[in-house]
Amino acid sequence: MNIPNASPSLYNEDLAPATVRNWGPFSIFNVWTSDVHSLWGYYLAASLFLFCGGFVNFLLAIGIGSLIIFALMHLVGIAGVRTGVPFPVLARASFGIWGANLPALVRAIVACFWYGAQTAAASGAIVALLTRNESMLFFHQNSHMLGHSTLEVICYVVVWALQLLIIQRGMETVRRFQDWAGPAVWIMMLLLAIYLTIKAGGLSLSSDIPMDVLLEKTKDAGVPGAPGSLSALFAVAAIWVTYFSALYLNFCDFSRYCPSERALTKGNIWGLPVNLILFSLVAGITTIAAFNVYNEVLLHPDQISAKFDSWFLALLAALTFAVATLGINVVANFVSPAFDFANVFPRQIDFKKGGYIAALIALALYPFAPWEGGAAHFVGMVGNTMGPIFGVMMVDYYLIRKGRLDVEALYREDGEYRFGNGWNTNALVAFAVGILFSSILPGFTDIMPSWWGIYGWFFGVAISGVIYYVLRGAAARSGALAKA
Image (cartoon, rainbow, N blue to C red; front, side):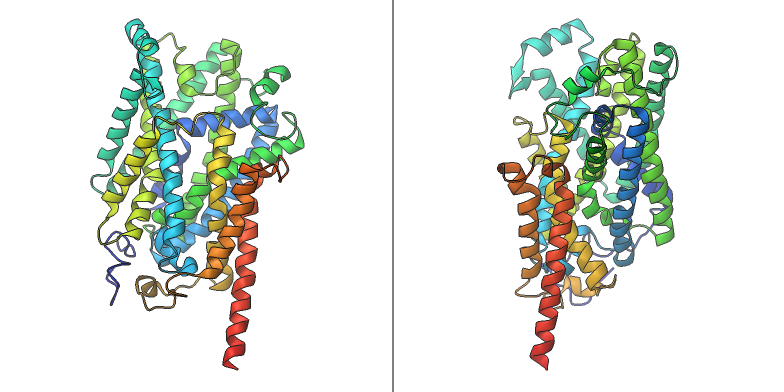
């Protein structure tokens, strides 16, 4: 779409409103299969199962969380369908044409962390497969570099490089890849669950994991209450919602290619509450069966596949989970920073170059591996920074602008979204206060209660949203008085 009088500093073909809209319900559904059906998605679901202490509790907490995810994601998706613009361009309406670079860069940095985490998970599945061979195991145990085994480094770099091939031809290639990668891992998840259930002697929906084992496995996660307690169930739902915090911002990067709100709704219903609950059900069944078979808690699929007697099954599991994890990386952690970095320098950086920058940062992060540790802790640490941005943007779009934007003005330096020299001070103040309470105080001080960090994303959304609404209201009244 051509924008008359668009500023070259705000516009390029990748940032322009979408004109080809061929992402129907199946493609939207597979955005979510690609995003959820990964090693990290399984690892988180299996970890959260331990906090619930039982199957019914688990499905209840995950079910409530999944409905919240659907509602929040749909808000963002509708904005994408109506405007046709990617996340950093949509952010110009609330943060200003230049101020939008701040949330864009925050989102891009978070994506780089997740890019590295998912790549490490995918390469870990390959390492688990290769070390079934005695010579490879010896090499893995005795050769090290960059704080990892040399085999881990090699597999990480290979998987990292393979992902770059997927995006060579842009978003249409992404759509085609995810349309088969998402269903593929569903098949493998079911095979894994069936294999372990048969080996365990039948289907079990009651957790046989002793409480002392659950307490030992969850003691350092920072989740309040004992497994199965009400406080633990609320925490599970909150962590599940926070896991998707980055995509709440940039789901419009995908929904902008959707032909209608009806198609979006259909894809989201099947892809979010239905798919999320079923995926979690399979993860819970697999966790119980794996414990009954191997008498230990195995949270990573590659840990389970490494114990398979059949080399073929181990190979199939490793390759499927690796491919699926590549799928989420491309969908959730490549597309967004590609647009985000392009938004900062649209003249110099296009979609591909922005993605390459994100990939290089993820490669540089690998020696430090900030994603190692508990799943719940990492999700909270990374996700809480996204809440204030979401709060400001949704309040601006739905409560202040009533779901209507002048799309062409988003690409003009002299339009209504210029605010003060391109920066909306009200949004920046709301964001700063929100991130203070969502991330900084709970992450670096002991001022806040120990449970605060679990709900940091929610506090960030609420605090920044309320402050922004009040400041915008005060600014509107002040402007009206000045004209009187």
